[in-house]
Image 1 (tube, rainbow, N blue to C red):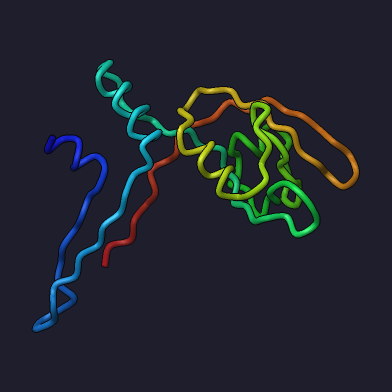
Image 2 (cartoon, one colour; image 1 turned 30 degrees about the vertical axis):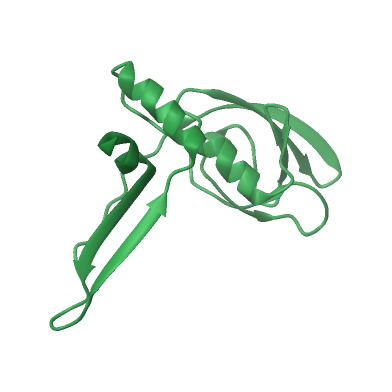
Length: 142
């Protein structure tokens, strides 16, 4: 039971400074992500989340999710996706909202292939993207 609870909800504690009160931050992990993660861990594999390399925003002019920025040399950029392209589907799942895109990407692993349908101007295009590994970010020391 303790393992189940720790996977589903995690909390951190700390102080805000000398003489200040303690703060607590909690967050929940969606059940579908836990199921996938548990399968990977039980099989003895590391969980390596897939990396597409796009930042996005909801497209104001119809269905889909607009690409707002791309990471240089990311899988999306190498597949030919550009800023202002509107992502319409991933593996046949319609992207009617940016949250759906986030949820779809959150359960993908590095090395998986995604078939992405998108609109560029008036043209519809489809590409197959192989997700990469997220690079470790360089954190600044404080």
